[in-house]
Image (cartoon, rainbow over the protein chains, first blue to last red):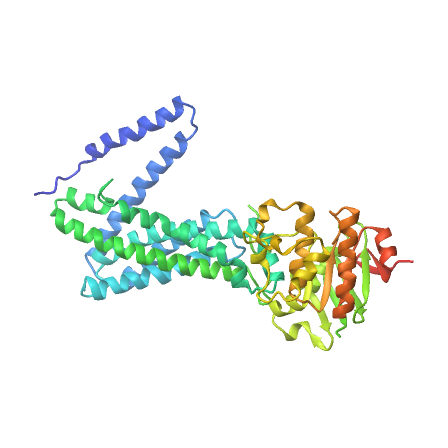
Length: 265
Length: 201
């Protein structure tokens, strides 16, 4: 099996589909043609840039450069989590809770995977670290964003119930227990669903890419499994951390519900 | 036998409030809506950020964990909220004397199995009082405890609170809009005006 190289012309043909979609949006007055085009241009620029950066990065394993790249990825993910919140925490917290919990989960899981499971030498070998970290952050970001959004939204709506539990002499963890559980569950659902249907409905993106690029299917499947397990572990860990930090931030030292720490959208 | 002493409690709409209730005393608060009556009760229960201190007997609020304080100084909010399916699930483990309280409000023990969603507003309000008294608070903060009730039920609630106040020597701070109620039940009465307490003549 050989890798068929894509020429710019091939990509342009595929891009015609996006143009068609934008045209359809205009024709049907969906009003999203601008956003479709901007997203398409953004993805083109971002992916080409990343390809370039990775090309440079792969030629040298300088830890500082790799660290810098990881941090850029993390801060972009943190920003994205913040953007997806309807009711954000005031101040640094809306960014901090998301970024910190993703840092904690993604970096630990990736480090474990690289040192114990795949045993890459050195463990920060960019060809392994960067793609793994990217997939990890992408998925953890989804889980964390959904879980945090669900937490703050429900806390806002259930203010009366939460305060009734506080008045009944409950502590803050009892007062927000159900909401916390629910938020965590909704954060985990996407990755659990993806695991459950993997291979049946669709071939996961990474595996598809590897097969298209000429890799043996069974190797691709094994890598996909590894990724899947890592992703679910990382998403779980990240969501737990985010929901714990987020719910703690909703109460102060005297265990009062502090919805004033959320911004009004 | 515990007095409730409010010592310079303040937050954004209230100037510092000082008020002492001797054990078993009942004090009424009134004032236009938005004057901060409910906020004062919430501040005493430590539900909103506030400055100042509250004493229960010789124990300071700041000397005990907030959940314990809220159990001992019970607040009945104007609107009652419920977090579980049935009435009984909201009550503490030890519900000694609960049937007596239920009977005084015209319920039998079967009400504990009722689902919250089928309760009327008035039933909710009365059962919220049952829930509060089941915690055996040493002082009561009542926010419009009889607002949604018909005269018969209002009388039941008034006499239950009087009974609890006497048997438990609990001080009662009661926000009430109803001048007749304040006169009927007696005790000191204050109006909140411009964030200050003024004795009502």
